[in-house]
Amino acid sequence: MPQTPAMKLVPTPGQTIGPFYGYALPYEGGERLVERTHPGAVRLHGTVYDGNGEPIPDALLEIWQADENGTVPSTAGSLHRDGYTFTGWGRQTVDNVGYFNFTTVNPGPTEEGAAPFIQMVVFARGLLNRLFTRVYLPEDTEALNNDRLLSSLSEHRRSSLIATREEDGSLRFDVRLQGRDETVFLAFPRNGEE
Amino acid sequence: MSQESFEPVGEETFARLDPAATAESQERISGEIASIHGVYQESVSDGAGAETQPRVDFAPYRSSLLRHPTKNLHHADPETIELYSPAFGQRDVHPLEADLTIQHNGEPIGERIVVAGRVLDGDGRPVAGQLIEVWQANAAGRYIHKRDQHPAPIDPNFTGVGRALTGPNGEYRFTTIKPAPYPWKNHRNAWRPAHIHFSLFGTDFTQRMITQMYFPGDPLFSLDPIYQSITDQRARDRLVASYDHAVTSHEWATGYSWDIVLTGSNRTWMENEEEEH
Image 1 (tube, each protein chain N blue to C red):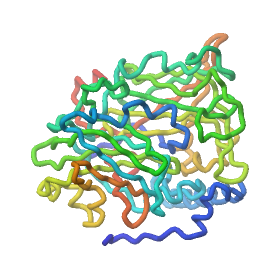
Image 2: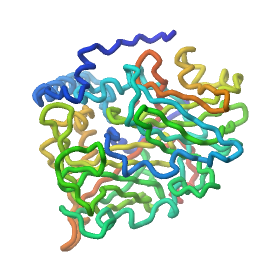
Image 3: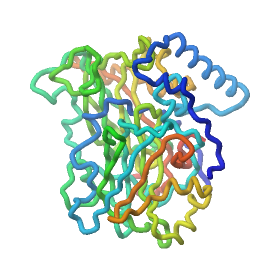
Image 4: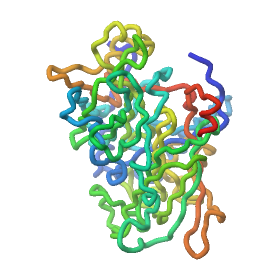
């Protein structure tokens, strides 16, 4: 762990997103980081489950990622997509069976030899604070083996962070908020919770 | 197989989640809150650090029972993508979206208010040019949402949704209507204190947060399991805006101030970046 200097201010507490964000947060095209006709378009899809294995119908997910070359986007325009600009960020509410379905591209490694991943944040009614996780691409096994986060996890827990590549090229990634197969959720330095 | 143990959730717990089974009393919920807070205060007296965030495992908020991780959050060092945030600009947000009272043909009913403040990171650095989204109930405690069945009037002149980009010093300013408390189904006769939901981005995506801003002196504070999921009084106080006569404007609107502090950035900040922000 690098040195993490103390903070001057104490962070404001989070609270649940609640059930009534429907007119505020979702927007047209939120789940389409690229058009489906984009040559490199990839579907990232899955289901959000609760501790009984039941789908959660009122979760909201956001993803944030590099482009295909591993470049971190710094372009505005996510809320009014023009169909050409890759902004790297997407948002979607799950449907009534907990299912989400982003259209994006495979992120490239942001540094040489790094395992590419998509950052994901989960909000839901009943979830009192946001949860961060990572969606790793499954292909580069050497990079995955060298990844610091993945190396610090048991085999079973590690598998919760690696997406499955389906025959049509889609990435499948389920989110389990609780239970034996619970997704690994992350705490970062300087988050005020240490 | 997992090394960690997981305790399955029993039938009794599950039955409590049935929305029809909201027969539990406020006394019972308040008793559970008091018991959790009592244990917390003892641990602080014994030298444990103060908590600053809500518990995600907080049974008095019944919907959290099956929706919180049971394993500790796993510590990770942020990597490249996590040290940056999506960018938003004038194309994304129109300045008029910060006024929730002008989105329809007429004036909404209720007490017009201005909520203003700054967004800072844990080092006190202003978060400039970033997206803030807000949503709230109307002056009768009703949301525009198909799942809100509370029989209070919908206001045709109020949707309760706003957006803004923070200014160069992290400042924001929304004009809106003071929301009312509303009933919910956590337990019998359960009421949420009046609040405005805030969604915030920082300079690092690890600072992403959603929270709720409350109004000073709300008599429902002690009864509300969502607010009380923050076990520490000083931390709870950070969600309460202050009445601010300097924000109040002559014959127009009363004013509230509320500053928001995101977590600490993990980026290496250059001098010029500090100045830009």
